[in-house]
Length: 119
Image (cartoon, rainbow, N blue to C red):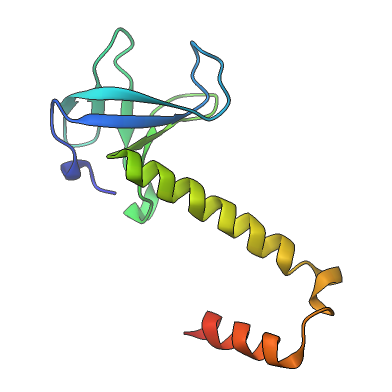
């Protein structure tokens, strides 16, 4: 995600452990206060800043901080839902392809999976 996808006044969604609520992976609304070259700053007392990820291939910006777990900034609620679904599906695939479960699949199933994964 690129910084230029955000605009001042835009409603955005922050996902992660909020220092004030202490909610695990809480999602809260915020408003973009400023869009600069390096950071998107959200309005509020703390004025948190978010930057692009390395490679810009992620669907979010990441919080600029010196320590702790950075939160993620999404441009829409739909982007948050899609991100969560993708993470759940990745975890499901990891469990479904665990070494002790691979023997359960037929040769046809394995060929179909191979064809899908190879594109």
